[in-house]
Image (tube, rainbow, N blue to C red; front, side):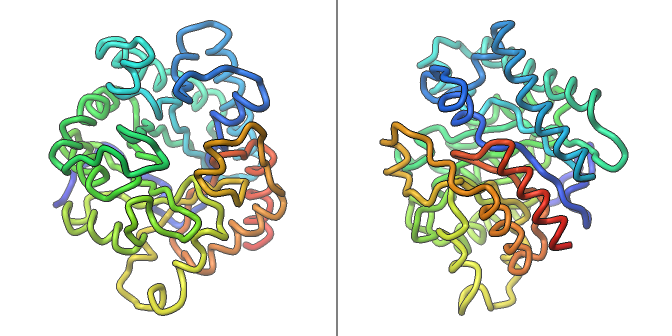
Length: 321
């Protein structure tokens, strides 16, 4: 499958990009906001919410510029799909509108902060239809393509350079998203969430999940990522007998957005406090992944991380280089 896309993604070249941290955990635990369904996209509907999002992304964009790194602007639309939108009172037309306005905000940030040394890529962010921690309500690949197509087509009608799907818990939904993005003419990145044993919530190994998506889509995904897991949860899956076989699967992993915490998903789900770990230690652990993942290009945070963690990731990667 060969896609003709509007853009060549600069993170596919030999340069490092940063992205943001844990948006929702920052808003909930640092700002004290109530986020029903853990959704941040409704903030786009109020002046105060829009300002908070603008300030949030600007802080990270400035970190990227200071480090002379590229930056991937992921929209706050992880929950902006039909099932979650319905729970929050959004019909399909309202979701279309909020997804478009999310891209508009990213365009604004890029105009203000992008420079030659820090190019900025706009990515329309998708989340799973179900829970991001469990492989519940699994769909076929075709059902997943039909489900996610509308949000992806909206992004394709905007200035989005790509789409990225985060906290994917099983391969079939990822296959459907890659196919929908290909049909819409947008590059796609698939980010799997991993348990403390390094496997997807579905029980698949990361290697097998990547192979299944690539086999079913003729390698149409631009790249794969890992998110919502601590490096100690999956490092062992990247080496040893599995990782040592030269079949190219490690080179398909080009991004990591790690949790600050070593807690399991079940523990995080029931947490009333924020475990923000050790930002400097996380920075060193992410930088060390470059030795195992030579194609690693997009680095940021997930649950519990904030600008401090991304600053340390940028610093550690600069020192390693």
